[in-house]
Length: 369
Image (cartoon, rainbow, N blue to C red):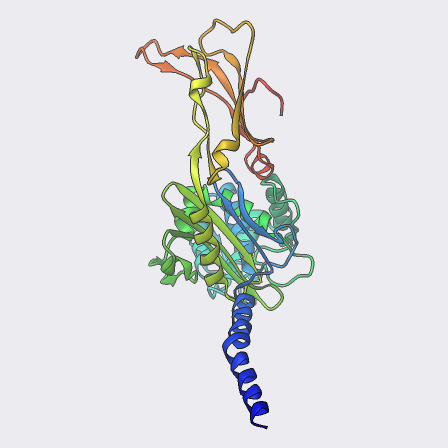
């Protein structure tokens, strides 16, 4: 009997010491997880981390990232907007617009991104396109142009609609593009908009080192969603978590891991170019420790080389293993006769899968892409 009693006590002690802490850790992990997530580096569009990043999901008010950048790209932000009755009283989060009130487009953008005003979203959409349906079409065209091709947007605010979905990867591409716009960055990094007395709802701006945007979101269907931008040193990252119960804590973990794992490296090797042949700029890309050995550059020159200063001399390609990351034209050095300085120009291309879609090159090129 005494031995049986001791065995029972030992079993209970085992449960208390080993199993319950493990169960608690499991619950903590579940609380911190997201249904989908993606972290990418802004300048290169390299995806540094992903989980279910291509799965279309509802994304609530993070939709407003696309709404805002579309307005910024297409509209005069100083123009006055008379609030239509259709916008006033829009359900959900609001800046309490009234029909007939007059705001500038810029003021409505602050209300949209700091206070998540669904009424501001409708007012801006109608100002831009005249109808919600036409604005949604413009949203989808913009998203596709940025490489976000697994998404369907049907409204400017993200209120529930079974058709309205995006992916963590698509949303990261949209946010990366938006964060490269100075006006957008200024708005989403603003903690307090004194002109209207609006404080930003995004707690990452107040709690995470280097955070400078961008948008929170929540509906019952979408769960808690968060798009975050952060800078540390010379690296700028965007993180997206969809349906993440502890969205702030989980985002901080993802960003800390990415900042700790990657560093920005200059990959262009100017030593490989012959005298008199130049490229406009060095290419920078985030690499993990040890990946430097996997990078190689191929230089392709015309034979014979042209003699005219400023003429295209060829092109260079930079690879990570067998993946083409970057290509740019090479030029014959051109002398600025007024200053005697040597000048060069080139057209460069981002050719990772995401970045080629997100940032199409402009200008002339030796090679057709």
